[in-house]
Image (cartoon, rainbow, N blue to C red; front, side, top):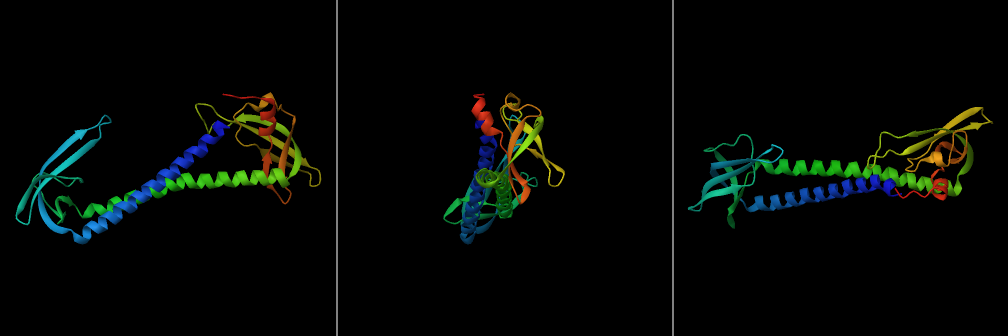
Length: 237
């Protein structure tokens, strides 16, 4: 059960992070708009650009500017922004807070930052929420089928590993089973959900397994493998 919950927890984390980033984008936008309502345009000169490299070799730049506001000169004020077209000695247009002249910002990067944060937040939120919605839908469908579905006695035909998913280096098992519909002469094939306990301890090839189906739509089904496994195998791994 713990391993089964890992994907759900991961998707939940993505969703929460997405919401947090979106809220951050909103905060940056509101704060930026308020700042720009009272900010004054000034011209500053880039005095220095310090560059350092982290352990991954990525460059990080610190830009320092000098400008004059209301007759007072502010020297080596750090600008919390950088772009590749900046260089020492270049004159740039900035916005200055008249109540706090030591605070300056560029105007061009504001909307880029807001848009970037918004996109990152929306993508992270969707990556988390969409699979969560599918998971919740499957849980509700499983509950409904177990309560009101028709039970078919299918035959186990194959047990294999789902190599597309791994938790702590372990792949889950999948049971493939078939049921023959004598009324139509058609063979219907089903597969179980991901099983984190080896089902061959309970189900052998050719053995019987219950499948709960929606009588009106056989594509809505649930292969009842987990309950027999939990009853006969105690898995603490």
